[in-house]
Image 1 (tube, rainbow over the protein chains, first blue to last red):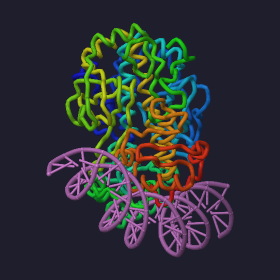
Image 2: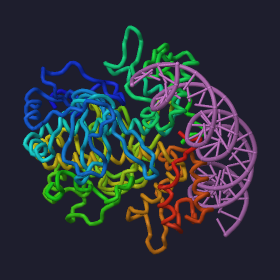
Image 3: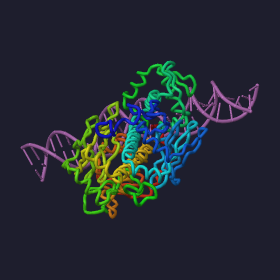
Image 4: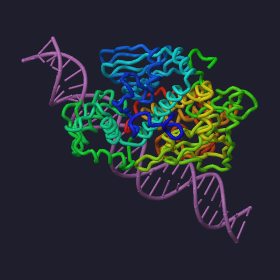
Amino acid sequence: MDRAPYWDPPPSGGSAPTIRARRLDRVGDHPLQIGNLLSRKEQDELLSIAKPIKYPRSGMTIFTSEKEAEYVYVIDEGIVRISRIAPNGQRRILAFMVPGDLFGMPDCGIYVNTAETVSATRLYRFPWPALRQLLAKRPQLQEKLLIKLAHDFRQAQRQMMMLGQQSARQRLAVFLLDFIRSPGFFNQEKLQLALPVNRFDLADYLGTTRETAARAFARLEKEGLIRRITAHTIQILNMGGLEQLQYGPSRRTGSA
Amino acid sequence: MDRAPYWDPPPSGGSAPTIRARRLDRVGDHPLQIGNLLSRKEQDELLSIAKPIKYPRSGMTIFTSEKEAEYVYVIDEGIVRISRIAPNGQRRILAFMVPGDLFGMPDCGIYVNTAETVSATRLYRFPWPALRQLLAKRPQLQEKLLIKLAHDFRQAQRQMMMLGQQSARQRLAVFLLDFIRSPGFFNQEKLQLALPVNRFDLADYLGTTRETAARAFARLEKEGLIRRITAHTIQILNMGGLEQLQYGPSRRTGSA
DNA sequence: CGCCGACTTGACACCAATCAAGATAAGTGG
DNA sequence: CCACTTATCTTGATTGGTGTCAAGTCGGCG
């Protein structure tokens, strides 16, 4: 609140990627950050009520929806998927969270989503009552939480835009570009992208199926935009072409 | 913050409809409310920096994306649509806002969405700097803003679920049910629903086209769930049937 | 080497976008 | 009040993307 004209400095990467960039230019040597907004003093205060938790493997459950919400979490290392089950039983991944992201905000005291690890993860756990007390004492800290929330809100809106109006191929291109912009996944020299998620998670995130996701990969490859080294290692052959895809025709026939 | 176990009392209707319910049980006689969270004292404080603005007709622009964000708004009366234009030129309506809703939060000092009136509207306009100052002084007020934001965030997530995984007919059913739960639109005795939005806006909100929306209406009518009196007046014949639709098969073939 | 999971590709059916035309309602001028 | 115009909504025919089912391929691990 001492930098932006009115309110909102960009909480993380400038171009608002859906997979938010992992920031390496941390303020101090402290590991705790929330979207790179915190001052050193705020980090210390937060650390005093936080407990570090480790999840050594992927596929571990951090919390499930409908359960009583006692904690809120901030990622220090690793990737977490936030998902929800539709009334008809389908799973939908709402977001992949990366270091610096905050999740687990309760609604009427319970979690509304489910959080699971996608890779080995280290995170900070905050008891709600203690965090609320701290926020009440520190309006600036609360304001930064608000900024972070507003940012995540816009990410969700962006995802809404994508889900409703583009073909699976276009959505895949946007997804790849988001990851490319995130340091830690993309090797600039080899032009290789390391996808940390499998096709199943990818499909549930893009709102499609594994088969269609695979076909979208195949088509991008046939068009010369990418090359599949392995299923999780993608070489980018034509970055501009990928970027142009999202400006392409609106037509998403046969699609919802 | 004196009612819920930890944090989050439901900001408006209990079942979190996408079109949030207009609350008639206001705290006092003051017209200003934000999701029915504010105490009388907070209302007074907010009113002291707010200016009432009238938009007498529908289709009027309140602000457009990319423009410098000077104000934030709270609806007192009427309906506002929040939209964004995709890179390919398609418009998408992200939400319909009703009385008690807050919108216009800037990102890095500019608006990211466009807001236009759907009907004649009366709203309160807050200059950002003054509002920020007030929030810094009143942590409880800021907390309520945060609650409101978290609620809207979950609405967006809910919309994401819907957009990605259901057929146009199912999405229309959910949309109708949301409006039915909102007092002011649904006549309990006649079982008639007054839709304030035209097919164009409806289609852009549901992520489909006018034609498909019309066909979805036609099919619901043929199935005996609703009856079209006029294009904007719908009689509900089988409420339970509508509700069952959202639990229906996950299949959204030919759909994204 | 063989099993097993994840990924990929093919065939088919279906929903929805598009193009086009018709029907209904609303607004306008005589 | 009625003809005309216009906007909005609706329906039909066609086309294409995608879900589903099924089979095949690739890679890891014991």
